[in-house]
Length: 199
Image (tube, rainbow, N blue to C red; front, top):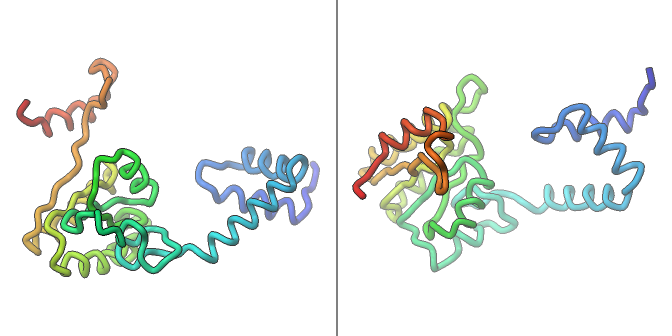
């Protein structure tokens, strides 16, 4: 058996911490960066260190930001009465790219998962509650994922909003545009039927 150097083992172990990267993928990346593209390895290391040092969280919405308040929260064109709650910055980016929403956001950086030790405090819900108590939000749009944990998180936050007499709505789930019914799974079809509206 070939023994890897400690530095190589450390690199592979670090790469395996990325989502979706297993032992083989980490090894392939490590060998590529060290064997063929050391300039790229230096650029990645520099960009990663720079990002870790410069990027924090927006004081209002909890999204990633290099400034105390992110550009979305600072924008005068956003409707601060509409607050969309998402699980991650990736979800926020997807909604922004759709161009369908012009309000503001709150990024949870996860979802409630008691088995994993993730409760309201870990998601920054006290910060969200302070935002809801601020008097500008009139509707909370729950855009968490349609997983068991995502649904539980949406329900919990919906209750927080209702206790403050705020409208809490859930994004619709169902048949995608261009989708054919015979290829849609049962859970998605059931959700589409229960969420139907007048045509």
